[in-house]
Image (cartoon, rainbow over all chains, first blue to last red):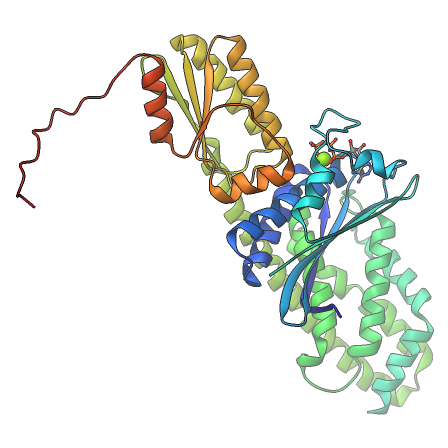
Length: 136
Length: 285
Ligand SMILES: Nc1ncnc2c1ncn2[C@@H]1O[C@H](COP(=O)(O)OP(=O)(O)OP(=O)(O)O)[C@@H](O)[C@H]1O
Ligand SMILES: [Mg+2]
């Protein structure tokens, strides 16, 4: 069973600066639980992608940063949430190279590859919620 | 203590009303004027505070039981600090709850209990207000530290290593207008020095995500149009692995270090570095 431990943070994502702050916070939490350099870099990069999507496509939102425990392993779990337009075709959005904007279209699919856990829920007109985790 | 129990109950029973009055008071104090937070957010915060307070604050005991309410006020103060609120605006959030609570006590409790309850409540709220200011202060300090770091990142000069060889050592966060400026500087320098090769060194870039990759790709393409080839150096192993998972390909020659990139650049422009130091004699340590 996965249980949250310790404090958890909710950070709002409204500006490009917030994206930087989210990265810094995720990095320090990843360090805190002893993730190695490669894993740290992966989760920070995934967080950067999702935070920017939240900002650019979700019209802003927030991320909850949690430290979770599962048996002897510790992890960082990030929940990105926005009340934006949602994603009508999730399968398409997850495709490498698909971007409705001017991006490379690698953020979502890349974030999934960079995480140990990935789940996405999105309802058009309601919003999007993406949860990722990386374990020690 | 019975009156503490009573306060907890009457707050719970009158949650909606107290929240409304509190929000009205905060609005009168100008909390929403700057538009930095929305009324609905404020209402949610007030309600959340009262729920936690009703279950925690009116119980006797030490501050160890205040965990959840401290967490809530802590993150509220931090976000207020980042949003540019003043310390008094921030602490006023908690202080303003006194009035509606006093009125509630006045209406609901007997005269004997009123005085004692109000005293306990005042002490409690004041302590939280101080806690709020402390957290606010700490967050501001963090902001200052971060800004200092950002300023340091501003100075990213294009350096001329040799004849037509330029280097752009990138340091720090890359996703802002700053990137634009840095990249434009590079293109200008290419023209200015008729450079053939530009080495973009990313040793100092902590995160390479799709946006950073895109900036790099655009720069490489623009440089190419101006007749210069780019080399990328300083891709640390963890960054390389992450880029592979992300699926970004820079399609440009990359070297582990700036030194390696410079060696390659020399080779390409037909230069050779020769040592003029005397050959070390055998047998000498
Ligand atoms: N939070 C969101 N709300 C609404 N749409 C989204 C959200 N996140 C992603 N999308 C949609 O999914 C598409 C793919 O996202 P992805 O992050 O993979 O690519 P991108 O952001 O367009 O480019 P890149 O991330 O490579 O710079 C986006 O173009 C957008 O249409
Ligand atoms: Mg993206």
